[in-house]
Amino acid sequence: MIFAANLKCNHSRASFELYAKRLNEFLGLNKREVFVFPPSTALLQGDFKFELGVQNFYPCINGAFTGELGKEHLDEFGVKAVLIGHSERRALGDNDELIRAKFDFAKKHKYKIIFCIGEDLNTKKENKTKEFLAAQIKDIDLAYENLILAYEPIYSIGTGLSAGSKDIAEVLSFLTSKTKAPLLYGGSVNDKNINEILSIKDCDGVLVGSFALKIENFINLIKSYKVQ
Image (cartoon, rainbow, N blue to C red; front, side, top):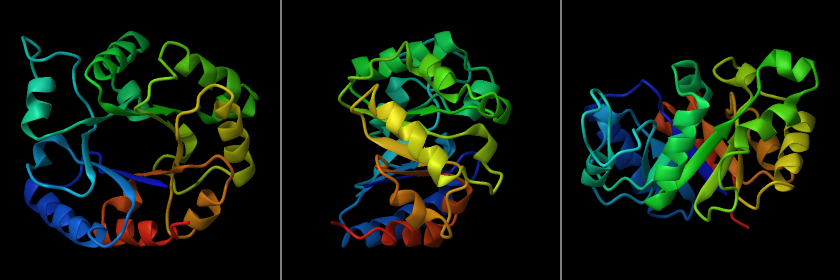
């Protein structure tokens, strides 16, 4: 089971250092596949028992790309996991061309990729979810061995309203017809719905936002799953 935390535009380097230390202590006794994506200013060097990743990067080694992070910077912190395609990045200007370039670059350099997809409420109401999601993944290599797909319906992100179990199950089942990659659900995951979500067929884990900002909350979510 995969547990991933997207800390978004939260945490300083000092506060994330405490977060990472506490998570390391917990994971020392617990076998889980865990990813954490802090803001770039909070990246740390260290021997972590979780996979340290970045929320954003530019598909370059280095160069004249003002304000961006290239592979050279990720290498400095031992980063080998990236988020791509998050709806908040798309809203901030990541178009299909850039997302495809990021994916191809990350694949070339063998990064673990959590690729985010999800529809808005209007698309869901028009019963076009599957068509919309298929379009979001049509230009990426769905057979890439280090790919993880995260289904995050936009209407659930940060709203406190998770998608229904039936809807999640239907989408994840659809995605299994497209790829053998592990599938995550994200969108207002919390301690009230975690067990229901993890019990859904084809769900291989969760991508958690707001509820994971406090390390105690994230650890409790991880504890909720009993290793089979």
